[in-house]
Amino acid sequence: MKKLALIFAVSLAATPGWTHLPVDVVFVAVQFPDANIPTVDGNLVEWDVIPDAYWINHEQLTETVRGVGTAWDATDLALRAIVGWNPNTNKLYVMEDRFDDAIWVVTGWEPMEMIFDADHSGGMFNVWADVEDQDQKDLLHGAHAQNYGFNQGGPGLNHWGKAQWITEPPYGQFANTQTADEGGEGFFRAEYMLTPFDNLNWNGIDQSTIGSLVEGNITGFHFTIIDDDDLEIGGYEGYWTLSGATDSYFQGDLLSDFLLAPIDPDIDWASQATAEATAVEEIGWGRLKSTFAE
Ligand SMILES: [Ca+2]
Ligand SMILES: [Ca+2]
Ligand SMILES: [Ca+2]
Ligand SMILES: [Ca+2]
Image (cartoon, rainbow, N blue to C red):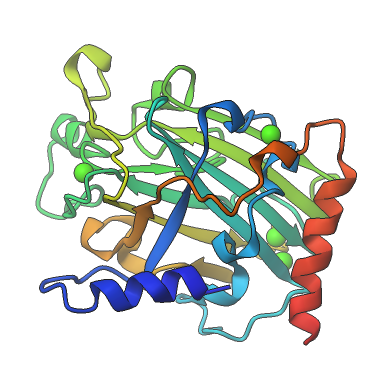
């Protein structure tokens, strides 16, 4: 997979002051043509036209809390994720295709925790040990980077902070499907649409600033997948980070770099599947599983 990331790592290796994580890695956000923007409905078929060079899988994640490190076990948690964008909608699109032996995303707490720092300003966006005033904390929380995910920050919260309105259209959209009941083994599939807020004020859009996603720029994004397979025990057994740093959940300096790529002429967008052609989705997973078998 890492071909594209490595290419951009080489081109950026000489850039001074580049401190984001993983070091010297730039992931690639695929650009959707205007006619091919995904429908946020939890059906992932329209992503299958995107080649695996853009995929992020669980073998690129590091478990940083429980000491598991990089001892991946695809029978416990497997992933393919893709990040995409479009300059005209000015939105980021994220796809999550997760295999889990015990899915508790909706009724438990094991989000794919996503952090979006559109202009890569960095800095703290959550957790201020020195600030005691709750109103001040509420204003700071998510102001220049936003932390999303199903049940992120607690049951029912899809944005960690008071600005829940950013997870609803026209600013955000979340949808999921799963192939097993809660607690069962199967696939949890989700799509997310996010707005690049350079300044978010939870009181409303009139007091907030939306930035611009520009082709060729590097945007800040990161995700962690929490895997909790037994709600009786309490806590979780996997905190799988893309950055390799636990503190990415509050420190914008520790997010990953994503190139807002130009349209890729090698992607056959004309063949993009529709929601009716669900068999294509299984082909995608077959390819991923074959790579693990090698
Ligand atoms: Ca879809
Ligand atoms: Ca699991
Ligand atoms: Ca920012
Ligand atoms: Ca689980």
